[in-house]
Image 1 (tube, rainbow, N blue to C red):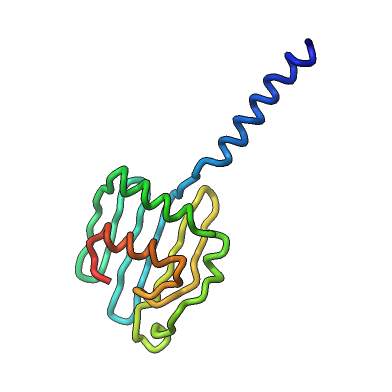
Image 2 (cartoon, helix red, strand yellow):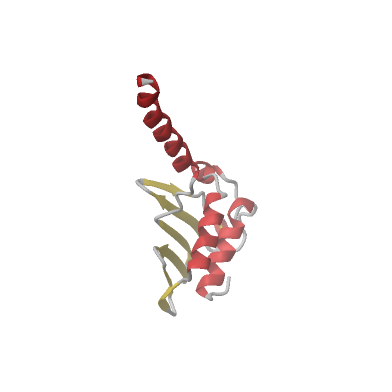
Length: 141
């Protein structure tokens, strides 16, 4: 009986720890930047604030709880450790035919930086994230 009393709290803590590991961490910050000579697009999401900047305009706005949850879901689907190894489907950025684009996603103390790609034509794994950020910012790709 004494053994059972000592083991019950341990089992409870172990179960709570496993449940906590299954919950989504989300992200602390997402930064998207696309640029080439004469063009710039920066989109940053931190907390519930989205800010975007081009050479023509700059704005910060609040995003809704639903939009933030959708963004977290999109990020959770990514293999963040592997985004630096993703291959771009096209190479127009090399000859200034497209903007050089990349993502930096911060989760806790870790920063995950994607490989560079043509803006508007990211690796398939990043397409949903790029499209969603553009839709939130009201910018045209």
